[in-house]
Image 1: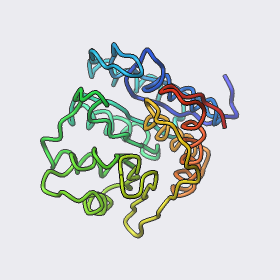
Image 2: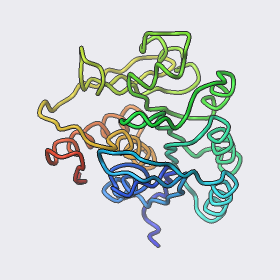
Image 3: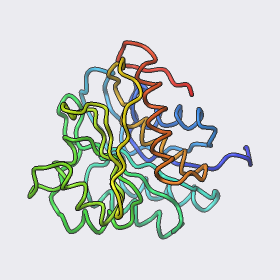
Image 4: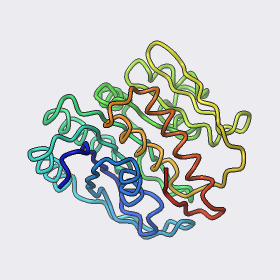
Amino acid sequence: MSTNRPFVLSIAGFDPSAGAGVLADIKTFEQHQVYGFAINTGNTIQTESDFLEMQWTALDFVLRSIEVLFQKYPVKAVKIGIVPSLDYLKEIVFTIKRLSPKTKIVWDTVLKSTTDFSFLNIQNQAVLIETLNQIDLITPNYNEILQLDPNESEAGLIAKKLSEHTAVFLKGGHRLEEIGTDNLYTKNEVVKLLPTETKLSEKHGSGCVLSAAIIANLALEQDLKKACSNAKNYIESYLKSNPTLIGYHYV
């Protein structure tokens, strides 16, 4: 095994089409020259255009897998994807922080599929905030962030409120008035990340690829703003790689 590359971990679902989940994350890690591990939170039956079924992995199995990897490898950054509940997410996050307090954690807030299959409902705001306090970044789009705070209807205000607990990369792919413009919210500032490409094709799993690129960049010692900016460049290359829903990975 290479001793030159930092170790990163994806904890996410298995998508047979390889457009999303751990398979897409591993492709992204390899392009960024980090060594990627993967732990499966669930198996899906799907293609790039149709989501049919989800079979979740038992939490104890996931936690044991995390412990085995962290006992042997210095994992620098972790991306968490689909999970079935806030408690499931909390246990994963707190296990990581117990084993390695300095490991960076990014949660890609996948709450439902594009075909409206729901993965996770935010029912306990206290558990959400407790968990976010241990996470370094979340990456919701404009639809997802509205589900993180049922008492607020404006995405920017929710992002600003949540940034008191974790950094928020608010993706602009669903923002009709400024499509493709992302905003990074931290406690101290809001950084606008403008698109550099205009001719982009929608891709299945683009959010997974973006968050995987961010943790790869964090593991390579980039600061948060640079990691997000470079990940945005990577995802734009991915989106313009071909006109279908399944993209090609290259830097």
